Structures are given as structure tokens and as C-alpha cells.
Length: 238
Image (cartoon, rainbow, N blue to C red; front, side, top):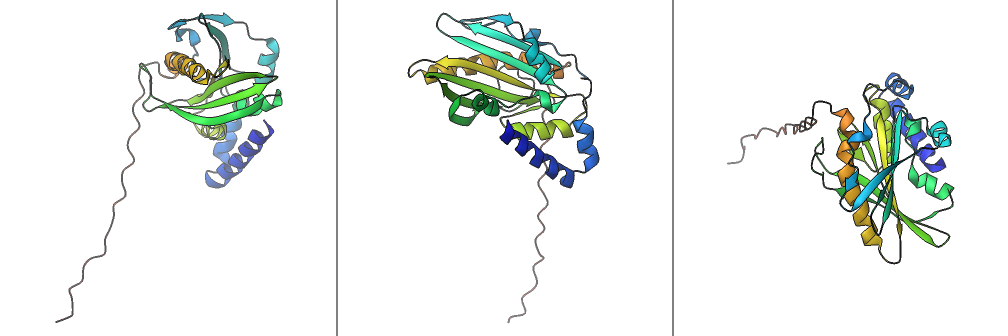
């Protein structure tokens, strides 16, 4: 978390210089959500996985202070996937697993981005940008997949997510969706398939509250700048 906090402070300084202090100060205020969050639209069953909603510890609520949060376990005959969805209008509620894993004694073995094709029912265009971690602790391996989402977009970068949250629409907020499962033996590909399968199924329902009227309007393409060439001059040579 310390490294992510430093990156955040650097991002804030750049925003203060480039965008002006008023906009940033506005985004840093804790405000009430302007959307009614509804995580019940996430499917209870995904393929062979059946889910159960888990109680969230009060200590977790006290630490994150989310506007809304839900934890589930998706269980199949041969695998268990834990899922957390955390929503907040305050950037402090959206924590970074890249910092939490080492803080809890895990050693990160792999850390890379994934671009997952937009699933059916996805309310915004483009792929889902996710980050995949593989970590080990006391001889156990765990794979985690997490996505930072905001209205109309996703990112795998915590700093980018925070800067977009504090400079975006007041009250819209952002969320983080985290899935993790144990890796047994050399079955890392099987773990990844399970995480991607569940993420693709639950993502539209997790972010659907931002789109009460259906799909988001695709972003307008950025117009290409007009290229002005110098006018040709008549030759003075014979």
C-alpha cells in the first residue's frame, strides 16, 4: 500500500499542475453516491459454479468505509473462487491488492495485465482491463484477478483509477472487483480459466447500476487533426 500511496500522491501533484486545484479538491471530498447500487443482478450460478453470499466482517467495513460491498464464494465440484465487489465515491475505499498481498506476507510471483473481451451484456464498449497476480505463502499458491471500474471504462492500474475517480463526475464513484482461487500443482491455466469465466459472467451485473437506461453510448471518436501542407511554389529554374 505504501508504494501505491506514493504513486497516488505523485498523480495528485500532476493533476494539480495540469488540471487545477479546484477540480482535484472537489474530487477528494467524500460525497454521497448519486446511483442506487444493486449487486443482486450478478448471477448466482456460473457454469458449474454456485454462489453463496458471505457476511462482511465489521472490521473490513470500518477500514474501507465503502458505500456498498458484497462478498461471495463460487463453488464447483473441484474449485472454489472468492469474490469481493467494493464500491465507493471516496478513493480510499478502493484499495490495491498489489499492496495488500505483500502486507499480508504473500510473495508475488507474477503480476501482469489481461485484456478480456467484453462479455455478453457488457454495458460499455471495449475489453475489460484486468490485472492478474500469482502469489505464494507458506507453500500455498493463490491466483487473483481484479478490475477497477468506473462509468464507461475499466483499468488494471490503481493510480489511473484514482485520478479518474477524483476528476470525474461527483457521486459516480468507482469500484474494484476481486476474484481469487487456490492454485494446486501446475493448474495455473485452470485457475485462470475459472477466474475469467466468473468475471465475465458477473461484470455486467456488478456495474449495471451505472446504466439504468441500458447500454452506455459508445465514446465519440477523436477527430484527426487537419494536416496543413505548405503551398507549392512555382519553380524559378529554366
